[in-house]
Length: 182
Image (cartoon, rainbow, N blue to C red; front, top):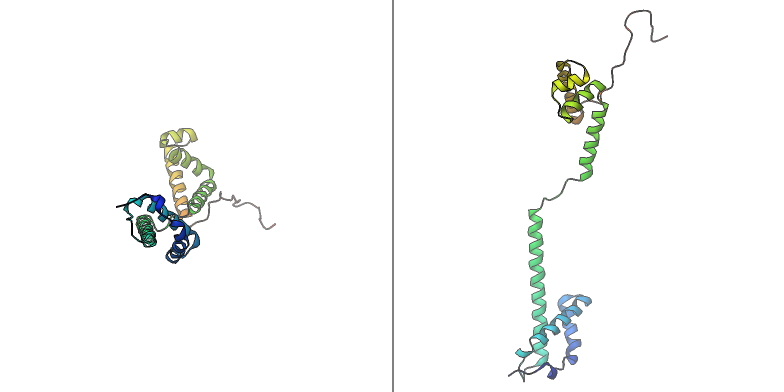
């Protein structure tokens, strides 16, 4: 036969419950939380306590079971987190590397000689046909194709680290009496 909570005198058992909870959790705040959880469970299950049973033993059993339930819950949660961690990539590539690479490609694009850059922009970036780009640039379509090919090759080399950005060719005077050392 069970009876109401009012006949429980749990106050005498709070200090021993706290000590036992600290022994289980090894942490004062966690022990306090465990005692509160155990007292709440004891109140909710007060109908299972029988007259004549040892209240201290029953409260310690509720406390211990509350600790075990919490430990199992934490262990299951840790297993779920570990499983998610195994599913995720071990690391993500830093975003700044990608941004830096894009910046380098853009700078290489800007360093192309103007005729190549214009042909590349119109065909590769704007999606125009060779004929349309040739009309805009006022050059034959073969010239657009040649400039585009040279621009793509230069960008590939720059991306692979094989070549420095192209510079417009330097004009030099051939023949005549011009002496560059003078």
